Image 1 (cartoon, helix red, strand yellow):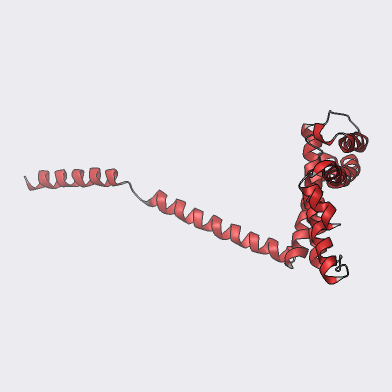
Image 2: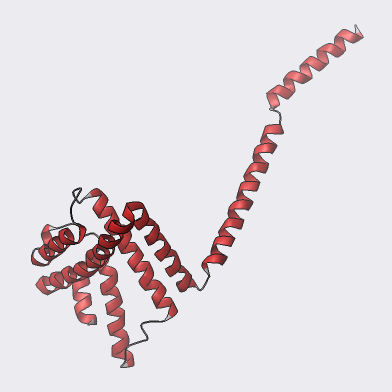
Length: 201
């Protein structure tokens, strides 16, 4: 597994291009991330003689981040590359199978079969904006699982930071507004000196 994944990552010969194309079929433009993960898994198995636990909290977070990013990539592909009115999954299936047969002829494969499968469902149910919101939630929840920081705590900290930053900016703005320019001060001093001289004379 590790050997094939490395061959695919470096596109070594026909087998390397085929393995990478299969990775693109599954994970689209993030195929290298998928193959890198399989390489790590294979190396772990070689040294430990068993597979690690694949459904820990942090790994689940990584999976969710990966899925969310694939959804974003596929949405970008649908919005900028795919023709309007095209069936997402059918179009991507055709593109990905062609990429396996002719990998050097296709530059962009979107989010692969995972991303296209998710977008085909969510795009129909909640349209483009809803799909992007859903992908954002998936990524944020994945980050929460990965870091161990609850979303509520993270949002409260971000909110407190933004509130503090806004208060500081407001304070600086008011301070700058109340501060008189030096040229204006010099002009006022001249007027005061002239009026004093007139009074003395």
